[in-house]
Image (cartoon, rainbow, N blue to C red):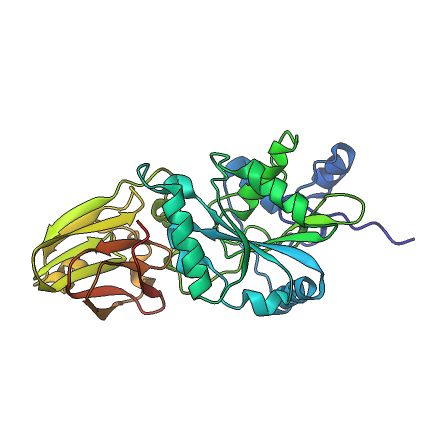
Length: 370
């Protein structure tokens, strides 16, 4: 008789008690206790939930391709969760090709991080236009805060009404708040505790996590897609906690003349090259210090202070943190310059500017979000 396979309710990995370094490991004593209580977690998720410690476990490309194949073969409703604080780098470009004719609902999470005077209607209009311009056919768009429970009931009601007996897949890149969003929806439906493991660490869901809607269909959390083009992929967990906003951001405006620069920690630099004096507003985590100084000598300033005065990266990360390379932009109308996984700068007047960041990190120029 084949032994029943049990799964971690935190990350979805199949549980095993023989190989401590492999996915789904839990000590035999904890496994037996979990079977009795129904509280089944792998050791990795147990440490993450109770001690906020993360043990790295890699998902192979073959495993991830299999998950994508399963989604593409299913007649389902797709919910793409994106980070309103990092829109361009958290939208999955090939999503429509991946899901075929399945409907897609876009959920912009973390709206509670935006300044309080920003109107939701303006953000939603901006996002709908952006999605349309990128060729997406959105079944609907929601602005949510999984932490503050904003619009959670409306989102769940829409999903329940339009799934029509189909599975619902929650997809998105790492760190957009997928698992937190699902837990918020479940709590709103009467679940008393968080079912899915949540943390600030990218890639904490390792496999499909299926939560039954009814006898025929499930709400399914999928592993976050790790994107190498985001700043978070270059940093350790402590630094990731520092650059990912946890509270409502406070925009910081600096009056700049040509020949002045802004350091965003030690991760990026903004140079004002040409133009009239103007205010440049920076939107990023309140925990990241911004240093204004003259552009002359800035390379030497970074070399001397990166890892102490200019953090992140931390002192232990500096040696392996990539060199900063420049991209020059001629600004003709108000725009945002977005540094993927970090934040953005808002520029109102014409001029010539440069952004310095690691080569692998994407920089986007867009119409102002705010």
